[in-house]
Image (cartoon, rainbow, N blue to C red):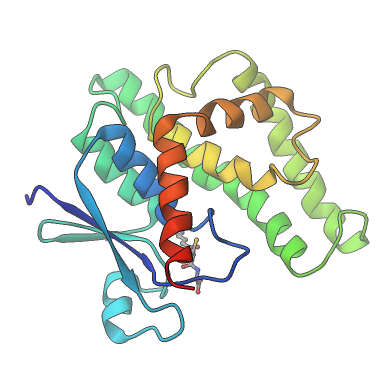
Length: 213
Ligand SMILES: N[C@@H](CCC(=O)N[C@@H](CS)C(=O)NCC(=O)O)C(=O)O
C-alpha cells in the first residue's frame, strides 16, 4: 500500500455544517494514528460521475488507500483501525468490543440523533408535536447510554474508533440543551473533543472550507 492516504471532502459547504462534515471522523482517526495523509476536494455543487464512482450517494467522505477506495465513515474508521493499534486494539476480545461499539454508535445512537438535527435545521422546535416522537426516541437512547458512559472513560477500554464515531455523533447535540440531563454523555463528549487529534482535525476542516470562500 502507498504511504499516503487520501481523504476526499467537498471543496466548499455552507456555514452550518462546517466543523461537522464527516471527513472530520477520518481526519481525527488519521491524526490519532499519526498516519500520513492529504486532503483532496470534490465539487459540492456539481457532482460528477467520478464522484459517484467513489461514493454512490454523491456524499463525502471517501478514503483512497493505495489502490482501494472506501466510502462510509464507519467503514473507513474500521479500515484505519486495522492499520493502527491506536485506533483499534489488536487483541481479539477488546477488538471485538471496540467494533461492537463502533456499530452501536452508527446504528443505535446516530439514527436517534440525526432526525432531531434535520428537524431543527428545517425550523422545527422541540415543543412542536411533530418532533415529540423523535425527542422521546432520542431521550430513550441517551438514557441507556448514560449509565454505560458513567462507568468508563472510553467505550471499549482504551480510546478507539468507536469513540470517534460515538463522540462525533453525540456532539451534534452539544449546541442544544439535550445533553444537560445526561451528564456522563456530556462529559464524554468533552473528553473526546479535548483530544489534540480532534482539535487539529476540527481546525483543519474549518480552514479547508474557509479557504474556499
Ligand atoms: N453514511 C455516510 C453519510 C455521509 C454524509 O452524510 N455526508 C454528508 C456530509 S457530512 C454529505 O455528503 N452530504 C451531502 C449530501 O448528502 O448531498 C457516512 O457516514 O460516510
